[in-house]
Image (cartoon, rainbow, N blue to C red):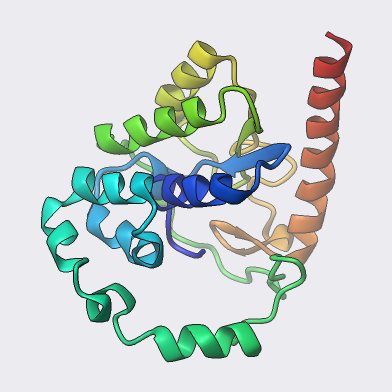
Length: 219
């Protein structure tokens, strides 16, 4: 789901775990969606369909109690999207390959570097911790930080490192990986890998995950 982070994903995790327990969850941390303070109300949009889940309902109460009253209206819950939801289940508007949507082409310009310090959102950090606790026994949780065109301020991710250290969660960091930094051939734009970059990164991350699982099995 594009443009959403931990608030949405924690809700979806609870929905998934109602009927299925994956063996592994790989969660990619981003600055704006998972750490930075902004309008958290927008992250509830994709959760409206699952409001009958008690954990999702609790998220609404934490983020904005006013939304809980609006959810009594099924018209508000689906917000004129019911027909589109049905249509997408028959013939989706966006085509993908088992969830993967490749980006073609490479960046042919020099983007502006907006790297800066951020104001952390304690509510998002709390949801990251709740996500970790929900996966305490199973599934195996692995956090990643994907490559960006510009090198990142390394200290930005300290709160995530602290949580990973506290709960012994693997964190695979590639935001400053020199194989990708400033390599336009691997990027569609400054924050999205193109198909070639995604393939290269996938090979790296898969091997790291396999090594982690092998080490855990040996232990």
